[in-house]
Amino acid sequence: MYIPSPWNLPVTLAANALEFFLLGTWLFYLLLSLRGFFSRPSTPGNSLPLRSFAVLLPAHDEENVIPMALDSLKRINYPAGLFDIYVVADHCTDRTAAIARAAGAKVLEYCGEGVRGKGHAICRATKEILALGRYDALCFFDADSLAHPEFLMAMSAHLNRGETAIQGHEVPKNPRANWLTKTLFVSQVIFNNFYQYPKHYFGFSATLHGKGMCFTAALLKDFQWDGNCLTEDIEMQMRLVRAGVRVYFAPEAIVYDEVPSDIREHFHRSVRWAVGALETAKKHVWGLWKRAVLKLDYRAFETALRLTQTYRFMLGASMALLMYANKGHFNFLFWIFDHPKGARLTFKLLNWIPLALYPTAALLIDGTPLGYAVYYLVMILMSIVMVIPIYLGALHLKKRRRWHRTAHSSLVSIEEIVADKT
Image (cartoon, rainbow, N blue to C red):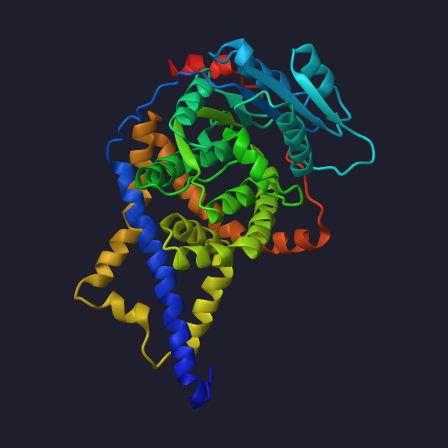
């Protein structure tokens, strides 16, 4: 590729700046993840006084799985008078609302010609519940998720420490269904142990996952849900961090979530998440970088760095193109691989050792058979194969503004999970 001489310096600067940024991001998260190998001190706290909760369960045609979700919430080890279960039935055409009423839940049913969608439904339901003025905090689950019996007790303790936005510890509830659920299970275990836990330890803001979330009523009055975003949980996290509010991680508050057992469902869900991430990044990434620089906010810095990875495909392609255009001139990556002597081998080891070390350590911590480590390799291969189709699918979906609804079919109960853990 011929580059006119006046452009040599700008191309060289752009190429090396992008290489430095991507390598620096990789090193930052690699170093951060090392904290996951060390012991985790217990989080001190007292659940007294016990706080009052509204537990929201948004649902659209979930008659197959919502009985298990409601059963897990009713089995929570917490005074019955201090929490109410609200099923937010969004334009349901099946028996979801009837099943919820029969189970004793309060049902907020939205139907007719109104605006549809989970984001709009929880936004509307949150406003109605906050108007009652009865609760200290609101917790959010999905219709396919299950709550650990100690979930609310753990959240009460976190609230008593002054935390206002909290994410519970998410674990797949159907890890043994097939190769795909095992792959996603290993991915989640590694994420919890080498991302969520280290971020929690170093004081960064946790990642919201849509289920197992808890917010004080006072906070939600100031930060309402964005019903127009496909990933309203991520969008909420970005707004909170931009306002200087930390999202805490509660490892003791466990929520069990269904992961797709069909590759097509996983693909459609990944595309929807990619669209939501792109929309959220467009809306918040520069504001986060601005706060990180102007206020020296390290939480905003990490969140901005993470959100920038939404553009990793474009950043990687741009880096490759600039490196090709810049050949014959100074190249940061080529230089650092050979300085000092042995650096190339060091970088190779840093790339290859985690392939065995991270899944092995994560599975040992979780108490899962080490044979599951092979699914970490499957996860990497699947990510490589699907990255371009997911990105192209996200661009297509972004134009259409229509998405495929994830089907939920796992009939695992909280009794089975708790019995299996004991």
